[in-house]
Image (cartoon, rainbow, N blue to C red):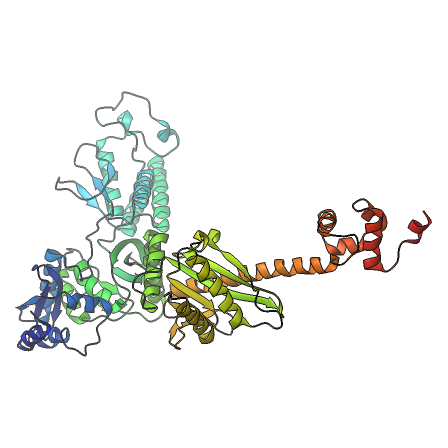
Length: 614
């Protein structure tokens, strides 16, 4: 169907709630959405003046036809949308990947069951806890729980191996009560397993209260050894709770959401709170374009996250308001059998917990985003800002440095991708100027020589760059464009415009189109790095060139001192200042007597009287 046909079909829809499915030419569902009024929402996609973001424009360009499903209420639309997203997994929806990649803790059904780590639950009647935030975190949780309850972690099988060997080192270290001896018995083992289940389910405070009551009863019955063992177990569990090693949250009182949009990936973190303490977190990563707002991301994630859960929190804290919050809260309330609220705290302890959730989301996204992915994203953004057909593979940057009319030099810095390629750096001495400095004429000479070397087949100047960055404004960019036009080469050229702190704030074309870099911090940082590296390379070359010129002028014209003897003096004394301060005896160790006298007279105007007497 054409875009006009799609718009006509959308305009024929009723003003009723429902769900719509966008499909491509193959019939594949590429997007699922819900609406209070289907006609208004669906027709917006196909109107010419719609201000869609980049993701929506790409989606609309691939729509061949769409279907709709009418429902009675907005609540039904929300539930149906979530179900269809799970069924079709559309490419343009933000998808929550149902704990993919996060491990679980498994507790088997055999005699003397053990806690183990698995990738996903199985239909085997075992108990599963989680998912946890990562494999290291899961392993730490299992180790901490076994140590707190003094459960075995060795490879022995019970009851098969009971009484066969002496207790292992864990028993002597106080980490296990040696169930391999037969005492404590299986009943005590299963009682501790049940307590560990309580802890994994997030009931930390309830467990410690029960153990404390048991300890006090043992003490009242004068069973002081058992009371002391329970005391030690309570302390271990308290330490475990304070360190927040256990990740559960399925019975949490409050869920706190954080969302972070990274350079390539997005992530959400859900902190689970019970009795005022953080009992764990749930992290999810997903692909989403930069132009998705927090509201859009949360509006897509929350129904997917909660509508399939059997146990729900009493309160859900969000960093921002979302569309359909009241409807979602009503659905969750009906499912939980008690009131569930969605709230956006502005200050106080809850706002601080929101900041913690945001931090968790950010760190997890940055951890899994590789340096190469960040570089690719930066170059793609740069290409979009500069209207380039593809990300630049090679960028060259130029700068001029001089002291008056003398020692005018230029630098050419090369970046491959987002990294400097120092072997391709080049330096130029300006040859056409002697009377006065002229940055524009200098830049013209440098670019002419650089392009001519490429045209002559010089491999050191091949290939031409995908972008030229000139340290300067519109006029410098105009000079560069004129040189390229005269030499019949085509290279995109941009001047680097600095702010009052000498940082590149924008790029500008020779026609005056200015591209602000502040909207993309990663691009701003890259261009700033290139500008600083180009300036550093130019200044370093200028200082070296100026120093050599100063040295040559100080030793030039001295009778009997040519190039070889001047090099010998500099090799021995290291600097002109040291030569000037040297006495005749030191100079004679390097030069013949006549040349020594000439050098001494050049710097001092007379010879040493003692030397004359000798």
